[in-house]
Structure formats: C-alpha cells, structure tokens
Amino acid sequence: MVARRHWRTSAVAVLAAALAACAGGCSGERAGAEEAAPGGDTITVLHGAADRLVRAGTSKAQTSMEMATGGTRVTIRGAGVYDYRERLGRLKVLLPEDPAGAREHRPITELLAPGALFMKNRGAGVPADKWVRVDIGTLSDGNLVTGGVTDPYAAAEVLRGARTATYLGRTEVAGTPVRHYRGTADLALAAREASGVNRGPFTAAAKGFATAEVPFDVYLDEEGRVRKIRQRFSFVGGQAKNPVAVASTALLYDFGVGVDVRLPRGADIYDGKIAEK
Image (cartoon, rainbow, N blue to C red; front, side):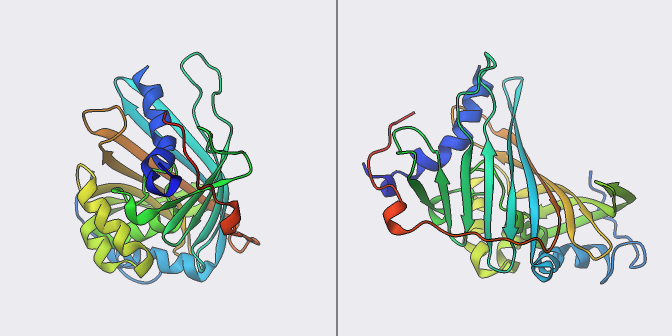
C-alpha cells in the first residue's frame, strides 16, 4: 500500500513506538475578575487564551508527552517554534530509549500545519530525504496524541471547551510570573467553539478518545498568554487493550521570535511503500 493510504502506519509510529516501550481536581469555582487575569472571570479568560496567542504571533515551544501503561512510563520530547497566526510549527521530536537504554530512533522532524502533519526521519523504509504527510482528518484523536506532540495552538483551543476551572494562585514558570488554573475541558464543546482548522479534529477526538473530558492545568502570564499547559487524555491504541493515560505538556516562551516554516514540496513527499512495524 502507498503512504497516503496507510496514514496509521506512518503517524501512529510515533505513539506506537512509545507504547511498545511501555509494554517491555476540579471544584468548578470561579475566581473573581481581579484574581483571574486581564479580561474577565476565569472561564472567560481560559476560553480566550488561544486568541491571545494569536495576538502574540509566535513563540518557541518545548513539549513532552508522557504515557503510562503496564506500570511503565515513557516520555516523548519535542522542541521548536510555532506561528499562531499561520498555524504553522516546526518541532524536533525525540522518542524514548528502548528498555536496554539504547536509542533506537533518530530525532523526527515534525511540521505542524492546518489539516496536516509532516514527518521526516520517519524510518521504516522511508528515504531519509523524504517527508511523510498525514491528513489529520483521518486521525481519530485529531492529532492531539498521535504525533507524540500536541500542537500548541490546538492545546490552547482545547481551553475553549473549559466547563469548570479553579484559580489556584500566583506562581512562576521559568522565571515569569503567572496565574495557575486547574479545570476540565470538554472536547465536544471545544469543537463547537474552536477555529475552523481545529473544529473537525476536535470532533473526531471527542468521539475517538476513551472520554471527551480533558483535565488541565494552565499557567497564564500577565498578558493572558499561555506559558505552560498540561492536559491529560485517555487514549486507546497501540498494543494496549485498556485506555492509556497520556499527559501532554507544552512550555511556551520567547514570544515574537522569528519563525520560518516551509512546507515540503510535492516532490519531497514520500509516496511509496512503508515497512510495517
């Protein structure tokens, strides 16, 4: 089969590799406007967090995705840049070491784009100079988990589905003063409120995850921008028969940094057979 017909072989490889290695408070209260963040009460502020990232324009990002199953925990890490206006990002993703301690996989370069995920150094028979393109519309989790990285803008848009949230006070993230909120978002609500680019993926995720509820912790700076966000998903896939606990974290910093993300040309996208893992 060709690559475009076997998206699951290509994209889920990032998550499946980690799952294979594994095989080896929310009160609903709202803080007062003066205690929440600029712009209104807690829920209103959280619903608008993605918009404030768009106004910020760009940032650097560090990500991690932790999965636990069978008493083993593994972590996929990423680092790169993101353009919130163009919805484009470039991240280098590091898969976990195998149980023996040897790193089996080269870093994967991922390009995040509206409706698509591009991966380079995919392995499994894909030439080193070629990209694998994945149509996000075919992913049952809306690519919130599959790529091993949650798109930073998508993570912020999940907050549009916040139903309950509690303000937990002031703290710091990487030396920046922030306000800490904890709550639960509903992916079905987020899909209705999200921008067009995320509406379809969130709808798929609401149906594809074990539950549409997404517990979160988010830290907003004085301008209401996300500095750190941690979301917890319940995912069924890979070799696991039972739901897998997945925690996705993004750290955003250096707002306004120069970002130049160029998507692959058609000739650079692999269209051959992909070896099964």
